[in-house]
Image 1: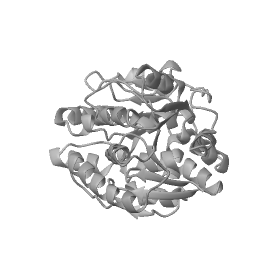
Image 2: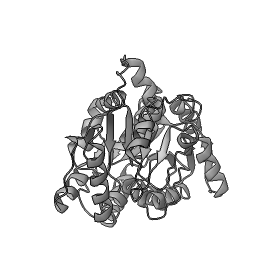
Image 3: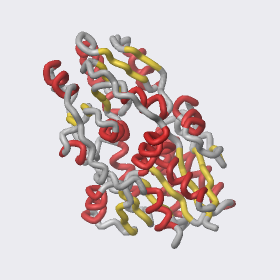
Image 4: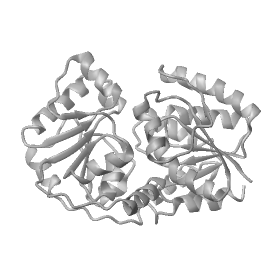
Length: 349
């Protein structure tokens, strides 16, 4: 029996891991879930374990709120201690977070085999912490699990040391499973419902960028109804600068409620990597408030539109995008069998 450890610390990591954890448990593998505590807010962590029926955390490192550097240091020290007593056959590291980077350093130094889930994603924006993290993780992983063929090509072009595979996107596995269980009614398309999330550091921690985003939202609110589940850090920054937003501000949503909100919207506006894909799978047009995206496939399919906050789209263009009908090509993110493909790789380790 293989002893597999997953490292999670944020909402996206939990969601990416869920289909694989479920599949490996069905195959009678021994799975341990190690939560770093990077997201210490219940709404951004534990709620997803309950919603997605993920087993209880095996070990919580409880690193808590701190700077990224301090969190990395704490995770390295605590994770090393844990792995010295509980050495796994393989550590699966999802995503590109602070937790993921720290885990990759520990596994490399302790000579523990690691697999990077969502390997090869590239924005080519070096001011993004996630971009630096994912590159370092890729170049120190034994097995690189690419969600798209474009990601696989990135890994080959960079000549990574580990073994690279196109397995498909585990988030697509989860989406298909969720869609099968939930009968969604088609929303009455009035082209005025926007679902929006903003949380990236380059948008939130920069006062001028955040101000521009608030002004943009207030302009949109004159023509659209905006639903905005707000990340605690985003909320704190808006309060810090005393900015005002004309939108329906709600608490962060669990996966099921998030997908239903997307279904009830005509347009998604976000800076999230995951939400760009979820909008595409839900056949909703998306505007991404970033200079680039890892998911070039959605741009090619004219389902996703990059928007610089310094040059926001006109209301006329946004309304036009909101009325678009998106057609999904499932093959772009695999066939919905990423978890099975991953199992077939790691069972040979």
